[in-house]
Length: 290
Image (cartoon, rainbow, N blue to C red):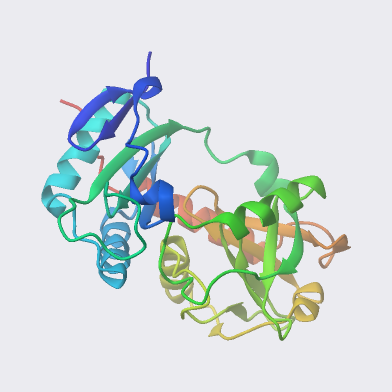
């Protein structure tokens, strides 16, 4: 079955989908994106993702390419045409096509591209064995709270992790505190069982899964702190894990080749993973079964 993409109002065979060479996303990374997990036919946290898209567009002064209601309909039509039960729905909005000039064009329409990529459900070995991460310097710009397509530092960090045999790289600021992963938020559990993650601000992305985990932690009665933690504190933590829309809650069992605790996924990480899976299973279906 051929994949289908959406490009500026048209549903096109994925391998034929294209944008203009002077699209400002290509020329300047002048655009934003969102990734929504389609899990067993359910668009997980759709509203918070679209809320964040709205914020990112507003921060960059990019107009919505279509209304929010029209975007939701197009998303569902794209899901229907691709016929995947579990996948990642990618949404990208750029300032549009204009002659190459750094300042904003005045008569350009925003461009909208969407794709759906099938993925497998959460790998059991990642849940049962955990993953390795490395730490790197955070080389990104000062507005990481905007989900822009300018991801070169993240790409370099992810490649460094792959070359080190790790799944992810956690970036550290100039004071040695962990900001976040190249495609995830970072968490630790202290010796007394306190769940810790860096406060939301311009130096990290306010992850949608991050927000869901905070809600779930509250429902579970867990002790929770939003504060900075250092690389050294992470190495000495009782547990560590990362979160994102594609891999939910993923236990971290090694950081910079240092084994975390006993080297096995911790009980709190495992419990949060289970509760988040239950949360996803309770989400409404994106398409009617009829």
